[in-house]
Length: 164
Image 1: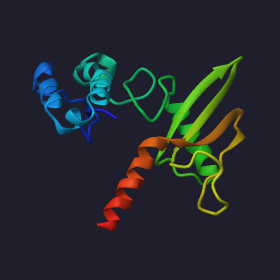
Image 2: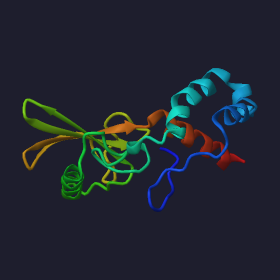
Image 3: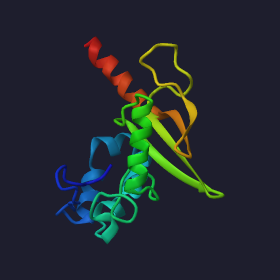
């Protein structure tokens, strides 16, 4: 997540000075209803939102930029290998994130599926089951529940909207 243009993957920085944007946030209904949470959110993103550090100016992999879909140590080769693995398992890369770890010369990847579900789903052919796989000399672990709390809130609000 970030303030990047959808085409060209270049960052845009608000033209409003940081202090003025903070005043807008502090005057919002969200801040009035939950000041501690909003202040924590502001603290977590304000510096990155305005940062023009070279690695934060573009989206990219492994030293070329930033990405929230891949851990910072993932390269384009890792992304291609992960795509081959996902294809072999009939898993769409949409709604996934990839995290790479290297221990004792062995490379492991965790594929995190965005899902409300945290555990093994009910058996149906549409659900990807969490599991560990060996693929081209690497270990791939598929987990679910990435962004579960946020997605649960989305589900709840969609259900509320459906009632109205």
